[in-house]
Length: 398
Image (cartoon, rainbow, N blue to C red):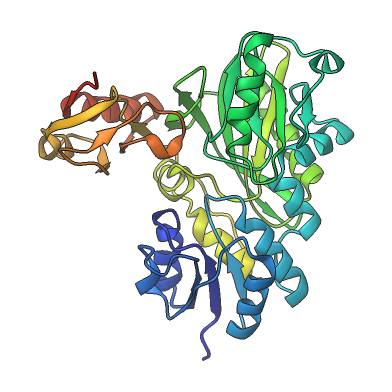
């Protein structure tokens, strides 16, 4: 029997769980990446040195490769290339129009507004450099972020009008198209909702509680499942998820929806038409529910029959190291921490002598601990116990 051919966009470590699953399932694997030295390139049956954001280039590759499915995970911009190619080749994906709304925060929140999905107030500032802020009625504090970036890159809290221009300049530095969005600073518990849409039905697989650095950059430092949500609120979130997916146009495939639980009720911060990053869907969801989201995504993309398995009820958590800036002098007790109960994975991506900087976006994080437990609280405790045990000594910069 001829192997089905799966084209994966991206060969970085973010794509490794997906690439490993494609290989495990016995599919013929094509990989697209502009970096021919990326970590997963050697795993490909065929490799194509093309940028994952080059829509026409990816289409030519997909046509040549004779792809049965085009997929990616945990990253936003390749979603456009997938939709562009899939639409032309008749493959299962969201539409190209939906991909634009899912990867441009201005188009996304405008769609939420049109369809009545609860969201923060906002103003979109286009490419020009001189703004008349009085026309926008901006209230402080507010959040500035690029319309086309992810991973907390370019996000900043602004507490007064005199700091607004510098924040906009900072945020624009992370934008491809030069536009930024000013949003209401929402107060409450932030969660993400991990969703798999099947034939227009939005199935909630897990609700994830989020911890961040807080202001001014809001970089994610931890996630845990299952978040403790009362049934009444869960019913409300279920309706919100359906409305959000319908607004963006996700009928088949994954969605990662970020929500703030405010005093006025839940509001959607943003959503991705993809699986969540930060090991949420590759590690936490399987640990806490037993559901393999990557497998489900592949089945949907290959137009196979999809059956949602019965969920188990366990806990899972990830915690990132938070270290003061400076030069690393030593890292000790790593092996001891790996032997602690409930520890699934410990990864540290720096070594002695490396300089580390303040955490301003997700790329500044130096490592993580993933843990499991009988419930969310136990999983968090296991992860934090390991974080505390590992000693990372830093010589502070003068």
